[in-house]
Image (cartoon, rainbow, N blue to C red; front, top):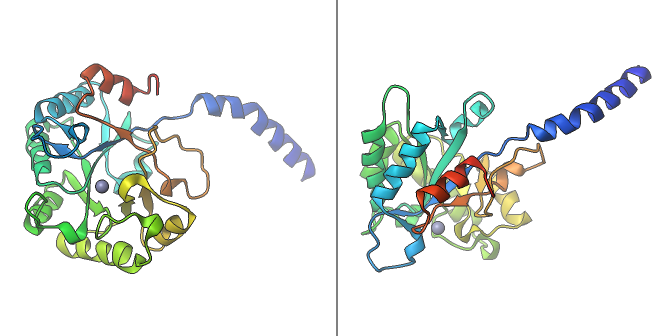
Amino acid sequence: MRKFFILFTILLAISFPSLALAEKKIPILIYHSIAEYNNVGSKELFVTPANFEKQMGYLKEKGFTLLTFEQWNELGRVEKPIFITFDDGYKNNLNVYRIFQKISDSRFRPAATLFVISDFIGRQNRLSREELKRLGDSGYFSIQSHTATHTDLTKEKNFQHELKESKEVIQNITGKPVIALSYPYGTFNKKVVNETKKYYKFGLTTTPSAYIPKGAKDEKYYLPRLYVKYSTSLEDFGRLVEGVNR
Ligand SMILES: [Zn+2]
């Protein structure tokens, strides 16, 4: 038995460098508004519909597989996995639906996750309940939580409302499980992660890097995301998703 363990340890040591070389970089992209910039808010949080369509066209042409968090277990089985996420639940995300319908075909199936603020649903520039239901039913979108009020969770006391109730509100609208949370402002700490674990399987930060699976404890609650900005050229986008200079 002891010999076996020694052999096993040696084999592990030998195979470790090759494992490291084979390390996978999985991009999780973050967007906010898909619209022409209207001089309200931060310009870099907008991507024009024309640019977004070109970016999705790039992913289609280069053979990426767009996943949502329900498909996490398929990560190792698909070609060039990538996650597309949108924070804040803006109404202009309907442009994403239009573009997805346009570029979808038998070999390319677009998919994205919308992180919505549950207390903001139905406000003037945010998606309504009916729209969220329609997007969820379309098969292109997974509707997930960005808390109830877009609070800084590291300063929050009412986790019940922000985490549990926001999840329930969204589930009641879509009729589908809410399993992922994106931390407002990208802020989190140990306490926030522990609270998140009670209700969610995934926590999304804004730490700017690709996700590299390492098997670390709780790594699914520290998922990094790569910003796509107004100023991101198609060339920049290619580098971002292909993991060059990242
Ligand atoms: Zn946000």
